[in-house]
Length: 318
Image 1: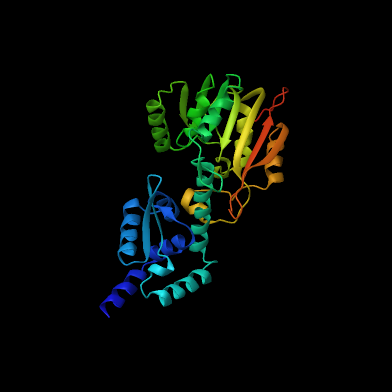
Image 2: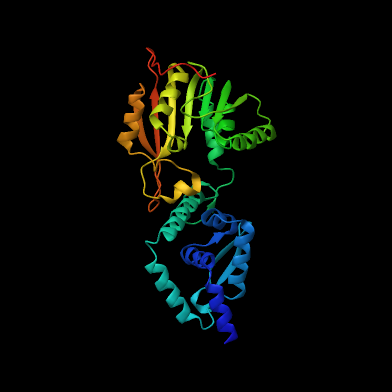
């Protein structure tokens, strides 16, 4: 009875049940689980240890990582009936908001795995040296040096990649804390051609016609007024300058509002194209940039050119 009491106390915790639900679907490591659950890594490790010690999950080393998964049927030591109950509950909770959010984040983890180029093909064939970063830097050799505006730059990873081929990058974000981390990263990478500025997308701290390329990477859905943000992107571009937008297609994952501060749940393809045209951009194109079957998030890539005639949206911010 003591063993049964301890087991049911173990399962009387929402986080541990969420862990079991995820690990019943996919083997995952601590870093991935931390990102999905949104709790501290130490907490995830503690819960995993308890589940492992009670025979509910097992761990395996693979490729330098420790992965966790539910114990296979042959290792469940008389817990067959318990697992049948758990699996019934997991299936019944498929529409629960918390379960849906965990599932969406799991899909994103799997997408990142697929795009990491760590493995290739169904046979898990190793491809040494293959990476998205290397391809991005190689393609940058085809681009002319120019002035770039990275609008909503975040932690600065894209900013630094752009700085490798740009003459100068002006990186704007509204968070001083985020900019502090971005500056530190640039110092570590020894990148010096970046100007960091605090400001809002709807009122950029940049002069008119001061950039050749403007980037809005996963930033537009954070804008209070996306139309105004695109007006500002047009204002800071020189005639003939190009805008590149990466953002999400409209989705129903409302949990991103609280988790990431998203103001908008993405944009429809035609809606995004219309916003660019409304801000005066020509040669507007919108295409799918990334999509994984079953993943609630689809990445749209949009581009436009500021016409040579110009598109005035107001006075420059100082």
